[in-house]
Length: 243
Length: 243
DNA sequence: CGTTCTCTTGACCAGCATCAAAATTTGTGG
DNA sequence: CCACAAATTTTGATGCTGGTCAAGAGAACG
Image 1 (cartoon, rainbow over the protein chains, first blue to last red):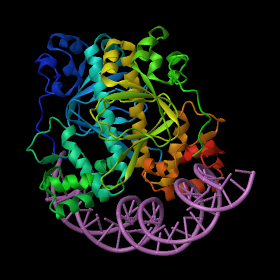
Image 2: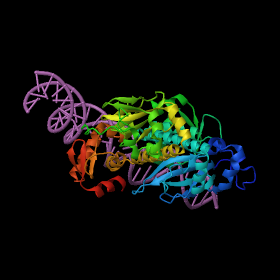
Image 3: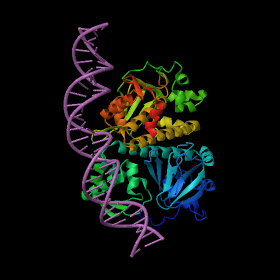
């Protein structure tokens, strides 16, 4: 897994150096709904938490006493089944908000896939702020809609049987949900392993690897590195994903 | 498909006979957040629309200029893929709200599975009301969370490979999402066909039928009628769904 | 430079899809 | 109310995709 050149942590550690006002993730976050003049309210509630690769932010079934906003890096959100199978519910990138559903316990475990930072809010205080601020509540509702759409996209992918369309659909969507990704357009960054892609798509890592090889053999993709793909024929990828 | 004994349509046709105040679906709906004193605001915006079995409420990719609340009966929400495959995103029952995501176009087609009624709101007017009423907005956010949880449950089901656990999980959840279902506890009403269950679970109708037969052979279920099952061994069903 | 982890590729097999037909239920019209 | 027609469900036979097991190649890290 190739670590990124470190992105300046937004809502930055230290808080002094610009704070939320200079946060690189704010344009993609619910915080964008809060005008600059009122940012101090947000900053007063939040703490910055850096995460090392593999470190857990919370575990499934733990009480959800806090909510989070991802400000850099990426995380995996997964649930372990009784038989040991791991279903990855989603990958979280800068701007994603964690804790929308208001459930008492976390549905899954969240772990960093690479160095990451999140803003941490006590749930009660955040909900109090939400109740005061109409703009924030509307932004949360809007983001909940986006997350529901993402979950439905995953359902559509998992419902289709073949492995190749599942992977193609995932690769098409990935750049969209990773707003701060670096690198040239037409390239796809994969901060997750083959096994994680497999657990997201309901496949095995061998099948994912074979599907990637097939796409390379057909000239749809080429590999810049293990974790960086180049899309050679975007239309072909799109056709596989949908048609 | 056995039609239910008709439920008195809530938010009833005619509107005069009690209106929202006597709506049987209100306890399960976002409308519950609106106090009795303010119900007139809701009623002024809404129109009751009855649906015949098979009738479409809207079609995928159509502009979403209205939102709906199901007040009786049930609907299927599905999306047709380019290859003709049908993925059923969910089944809608009394109390379910349609139009949470705020997207410009419908993600899928909604069709009644049995005689049903919905309350219809012009989207712009409903959003204006939402912006005024804190209680309604909070209820919508809460319901969005519930729907996200349902979608994630479907992801967890589709991600698991075997057919039997998928069906078992679906049968376990169905009674919970159908709050106004009639009939004795321990019985499961299936307003949908085997083919629709299959398209929801990413299986074929033959596989669903075989899985049902297996559950009957093992004594987990028995059939009251084609569309009504009796759970003989709830623990066994639950074990199949999770373990 | 060696250890460890991840990825790739191969061989084989099981479970589900597909094709096909019979049984059951539902709906319609006399 | 019965008989017939249409639709749905059940069951069977066969083939293929993807899972499982296994081994080797390539990267990452100390």
